[in-house]
Length: 248
Image (tube, rainbow, N blue to C red; front, top):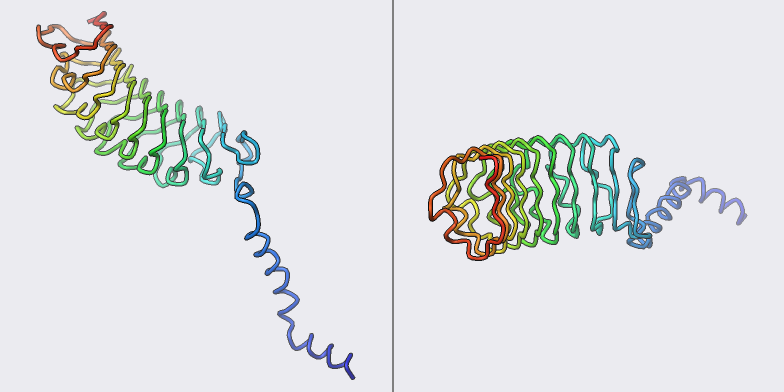
């Protein structure tokens, strides 16, 4: 009698057999350690033990920045890929300290795409196709020390594009198409020590912008189109040690 009753109960509740594996799966996801949530794309190399704190995705034919890496990742190298833009991909990595996006095909940095990267120290965007720096292009990068924008196609820089870079020490704008800068483009960048404008199309020394760079030690404006330098062009640069105007 009891065996018949048990069989009848099981048959009347067929969902139990399917529910148990699902419940076990959900339970396993809950008890997994945080490190297990890290995933390394097949064409990337993730280092740093179980935490995967470093990701190397060099020459991986990526068209988008991967979003499945460990959120605790501190270093990501995405050089030599086919990435076009950064929209909606960076908020996943708030702990990032070094990001290398050189040699991609990024045409625009957009606005506020780095808003969650307050811990970023080094950003390499060299050898891309960026033509302009929009309003708040680097908003959120309050602790950035080094920014490499060399070998792009930058022609215009919005006055607030660089306004959040209050800790920046080195800015490289080598080999772009900058003709002039609007006033106050460097406002708030009082910690900048190295500024490289080599091989642009500057028609004169941006004296009104240099005035904000009280800590500047090295200025390279070689290979531009500057024909005349006023006596007061570098008046505010009290710490300047190296100046290059060759090839003008």
